Image (cartoon, helix red, strand yellow):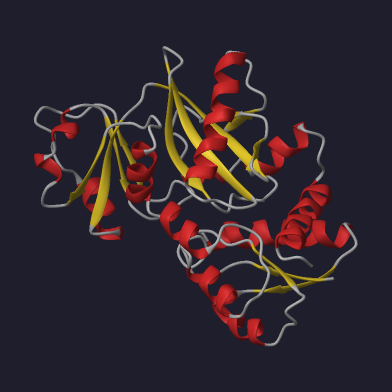
Length: 304
């Protein structure tokens, strides 16, 4: 069984994808598989040359990686691949569609509104602590916490920078509490992870990958009952959004231990700093074992 690992791509999360793909490719080789690697930014035509018995692991983040684009290319070629299909990937990548779908399913999310640069100041939610974030993207790119808005709020260059990334953005009520995440593997939740960013900068792109953020798994400061509820809720999010094989569901836990869903990630990071492998390790899965599980799920679902 040959394995093709896709990494890189052309999104702002390219460097993280390259590191994730390298870690997955090395683990697959350690698990005994014959592995090829390709970067869709340069090697997309490789998909036309591989056998339909080759399993594709698209370890891609961001635009053209998690938004359904590469999944449509794989589906068009009838290639077996890891992760959610194109429809689910596209929906999960759109934070506003995700918000609407989960809210309609009765799942608790922060209050939110869709705004443009022109309508931002007219939105009532901006008169309280909020987060402004682009509709599409990951790795905390295009996310701006505004904890102390002046009444009335004043737009600054950082707000303008968000709208340079995308024409529309989401204003979301800021939840005062702790951030946790729950990885999902084959429909079942792995151990909860608490994310404790440094005092400066929060859980932004830089702090996410420079080692300054603490990731505690399982968290000691989150009651066991809340962790159980988070895992059950994460499994429901995974199912509601039509995710397949793996995902990672992000939450906030407020001071009353109420859970608020933030978003669903269809292809979580797989670097040495990434949350998904850390949680799997607590369940006793090494990286080669985790990747072997990825491959087994694809074999099962494509009858290979």
